[in-house]
Image 1 (cartoon, rainbow, N blue to C red):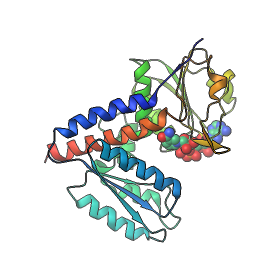
Image 2: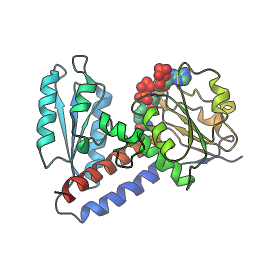
Image 3: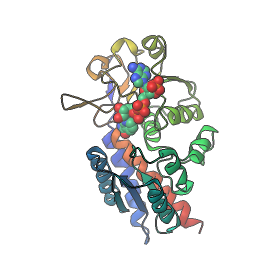
Image 4: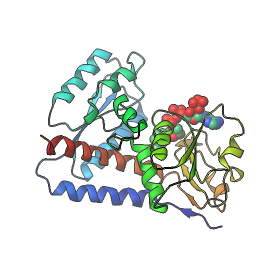
Length: 282
Ligand code: NDP
């Protein structure tokens, strides 16, 4: 079987150009605030790439880069200030945070309508209860977009998700359930993982284990979505053994160039939507 490699970069470029056209028609621009605490190099690179992407579609984007020793109260005060600032439409806090700061408290302090990461318990709860009013976390939202690029309807499909984190596995399970998939969530204690995965029409690997998913884990013709970002000897790879699985899967996302670019595009979409919600009803 020939496997179609899904071009996440092209899908993301399409989303971003549509956002850029809509922003160009507005006088007042969407404004995103990105908060980074500490000097983690990877986080800084990632935040700068978000800022570059936001500016490229015509948004304003500020990075608030705070010292590693910033207190929880200091960070809460900044969030409160940004919550009150009507020129700021989206707020995201780069995780992980230093040990002295409780991430749950911080994420819970962001106003739900400015929570463009969709990690606030209010938005997570709306998604879980099947509401279409939730701000959906960018990575799951990007995965849904990718799946819809190859399947108009996901009704009745069996999705197996490897990973149950709050930023990928769990929100994706709710999202796919809301789109009428039958969803199985696997994790590090799941028994017979390869056999379980081989029953999936849609197999999503989000576990952070380089090249874990092999050919015999994949049902013939299945869609394989690789979320993992790992490095082997400096080279990027996903949670799927791409070469091994090609020829077995119907569709596959590459790493890099699959889910990653879609995550940033969906963050911009969430920011644009937050801006519309805050400006059109005021
Ligand atoms: P976490 O470490 O928070 O969660 C990993 C999950 O995978 C856990 O639920 C864990 O199970 C499960 N797991 C770990 N090892 C195994 C195994 N051998 N078999 C089955 N399940 C396993 O990771 P994240 O969800 O934050 O990220 C997952 C991957 O996705 C990482 O590589 C990350 O870099 C990448 N990522 C990529 C993004 C993108 O935009 N492309 C965005 C976000 C993440 P348990 O709960 O039992 O510990």
